[in-house]
Amino acid sequence: MIKLNVGSGPNVLPGYDNLDLYVDAPGVIRADVRKLPYPDKSVDEVLASDILEHFPRLEWKAVLAEWVRVIKPGGLLVVQAPDMALLAAELLGASDTNNDEDWEKWNRRIFGGQGDGRDDGKGQFHFTGFNAYFLQRHCENKLGLEYVSCDLHNYNFKLQMRKP
Image (tube, rainbow, N blue to C red; front, side):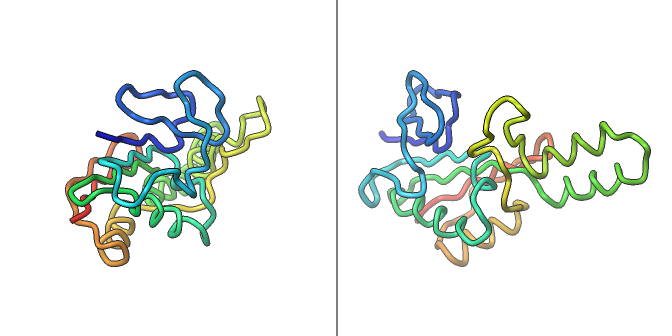
């Protein structure tokens, strides 16, 4: 069974091939997840936790299609991403107060950590926003995937889709 954790960062998951372009750590395969080094229909699961929003608006659809390319029939695509609609509402609420910390907290969640002053921020900017329903519709209508489940937690959604 082949399972991929794309954009893993240093979070190495047992039982997964952990792939990341920017992280050099034990258990992480240095790879650009925009072009996976796996044959068509060879992977049982692609886990994309907090990475899809890091691709530019004009690129994310091709990246998602690439991940689906490698999934076997019956395999899963699992995408976790910030729910932009919820975050935007929180940011708007923060703008009505004098609490700069709230504004910065929601701003960071929307636009990414950007390195937080510790490094160059490569791979840490958010370029695209999603909500679960928008991404589900795209996966069904453009990629032919079937809905499995969706969970919401901590202003993120985790969408599971199956390849028929």
